[in-house]
Length: 460
Image 1 (tube, rainbow, N blue to C red):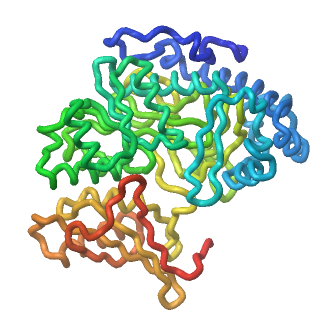
Image 2: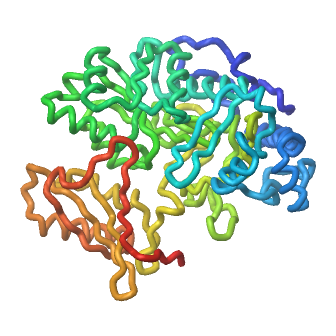
């Protein structure tokens, strides 16, 4: 199979918009027999490594230093011989060779769009796109939206940042499938609620934390999201919450709408995976991105379904190939055929980040592990914060939560129940502090769940 197979076609040759009754955007691609995916990926990967080696000075230099060349890739397992890259390398090479860095594999004249990371941990890193890159990205967004049930009859409100954020242009995927698309952006909550009421939007994309916050804000303003708004689908991304059943259920109860989790990263393109109507895992952009899930310490693959660091390799992106990019996200995957009929790999959830993992008395813990327990407890609002301190040369964890205004149980009962459940399910002992409602800060974008008050953090 060559790199120009139907599965790898560009957006310009993709099929026309399907009939609204079809569950698939591109049925032949999405239901391709599972055993054919690896051969297709290998063919694309061989061509992509050659593109990177021939056109990006950084890759030629690092491949040569590692003693590997594109023709050495004969199986997907051979990719493990190639060096990895990470966010620090992208930032360093961008500063060394402005504007786009020497991982770029096309001249700047061929670049039509750049997104940028937030720069919250350093200099914002740019992600360049050629015209083909951009068109294929938007076609995949349309495919994801279609798999989630969005149709031309929908009114879709896009409440993500448009200022260089890679999630901004994802709205064009909704437009491509024919939905009435509202470029709301990150406006104040009161304004967004007014937009949702005026347009009677049927779908909304935001973060899980903000979906929660917006629903609470609506109720405080006398608006019942279930009765007064028309939102039936909530697309969420940017945090693990959308794949945590307890969080998803609480948001759905608040809105009377279905929640669909999406995953993306600024270094490749907007949403790289998303939930279909079955909502059991996120279908991966397997015709665009190859996935490895590795033990973050040994670099060896973990078994399917087990947690490991996600390492991504682009398969078609011309402007800046990413070969074995260490995302820092701890994930799990499955290749089982989905009940919807799609055969692509499914992301079972982002369980946390390597740098968000807490080690308490030798036990690994992610904020998402705590979130599932807090959101399940009917006596708690669902908001939480993890406070880590150093006591007697040991790390100590305190979990701050809020009781609901109508909670009938005592604070001691609520604290004791969460403490016991945490210990039983994770093996971690922690103090639990139950605060009054609305004490903890609400997030209007990504929630900050960890307050690390240690002077120096142990890493072993």
